[in-house]
Image (cartoon, rainbow, N blue to C red):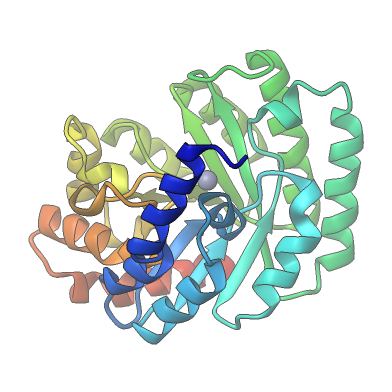
Length: 292
Ligand SMILES: [Zn+2]
């Protein structure tokens, strides 16, 4: 506090444009675009004004955004945030994270989830359970504990007949085993698809949509690009995973729904069509899955 460095940083800040304004200037969207996976609450951790960003995206054509839960503790705040926007729906769930898994209190969190879902099941805002799944890359809690948390939430999805949003990293085989053992009638979304066409086919056979995020635009994403080119249009969704995974062309910025146009462009290019061609199909896919 009060060091010379603080003063320099503050002066610099006043000279530069507010980052929210800068992002609004950079919006690349088309009318009817949707974002199947965003974390509005996390935009605040990047010192961004989530509400102003979202309003600007909606004025530029964003038709739907799905706000994804990672922790039941934030559910009420998120519900308030989403309730301000008729274009936004949401999920509730416990992601593979330190707070959910390195906590002796998993049962309490699962009870919270069940209670929140049961209390809000008739609210059209709540359209799914997620994000849930397995992550062999970060390995919080160990894979066995992750599997238990995942399966317990699949059970809640089955009980309330909700689709699920799946996070799976370096864990296709175990993820597939759990998804196929539950065979949810509503299916769900493989979010931020990062695997290959063979796995995509298996997930699609279980009634899952494949959602592509900004990482499809990065180097060394050949198997993701191949999948986007080959799968039926009726299985495609697209997302930001904001504030993460910003598309390559604007990668120095935090991600937000305003950058969805880049991901639509890229998917379209791999399929030899245009973003405008994809928009109505992706919208229809989302409606079929969530009813919204
Ligand atoms: Zn996410």
